[in-house]
Amino acid sequence: MQVIIFDNAQQVAISAAEWVAELINKKSNPVLGLATGSTPISLYQELVNKHKAGELSFSNTTTFNLDEYLGIDEINAQSYRHFMNENLFDHVDIDKSKTFLPTCNQGENPRAQGLAYEDKIAQAGGVDLQILGIGANGHIGFNEPTSSLASRTRIKTLTQQTLDDNSRLFAADEFQPTLAMTMGIATILDARYVLLMATGKNKAKAVKDMVTGALSAVCPASSLQLHENAIVLLDKEAASELADQEYYIWANQQNLKINQEFGLYHNY
Ligand code: GLP
Image 1 (tube, rainbow, N blue to C red):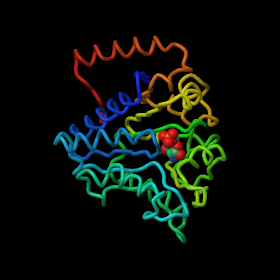
Image 2: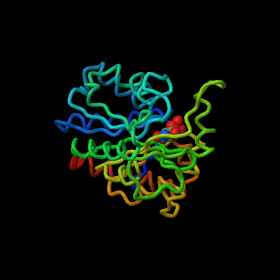
Image 3: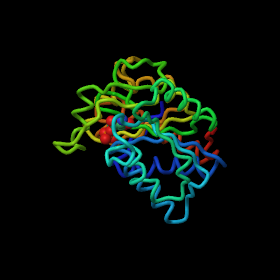
């Protein structure tokens, strides 16, 4: 895992946007894995800014989101489709027919829908770069603690902690879904690169478990320890419970030197 610690959340977003821009500018048909939640909003803002400045075109990009709620349709303001439209898709030149979320509408077979989503990702050539946030309980996507490390796209029942954490986004009398379709942990690990963003003190414990805890389904994000190209972008608060912070800062300086000398090499 490459752990990079920044002074603040804005720097995390700027760095994440550079990773995305590098992929999109380098590859003719890039496939981007996207995440929702509060954390990546500033990344999407940076990408919109780059697009408006004429630096970035999404016209050849295909996207796959990690997850989507069940029981609400896509025009519902709480749907992740709506979130993606509002925060990114409506402001850039992406072809929306190439933007996918793992949906399962009423009457559809969730198992078939999950398999179909996996097929669609495979047909697109696999995800080049998967953006991730992390839940305070260590979840990635909606893979809650004890999710199989070999899991594929399927329905998950949300934990009470996740429901409580996300309740801030719902009005008191608004329906809050308790089920979601999510890429599985194995689906996420298939991405060529994974880029996890975490900011704020409330993520510090999950970050510590992910980076230095045991590989365990109890902390789904610890599965990234198995990934060859996992990059973890943190602000100081999210990094605050990590031992050896100086080591990560020093190691990153060495990586920057290598990049300066030999250029970036990302094998997309
Ligand atoms: C949500 C999403 C995750 C996200 C996480 C953290 O429920 N399913 O993909 O990473 O919880 O969200 P936030 O960035 O708002 O803290």
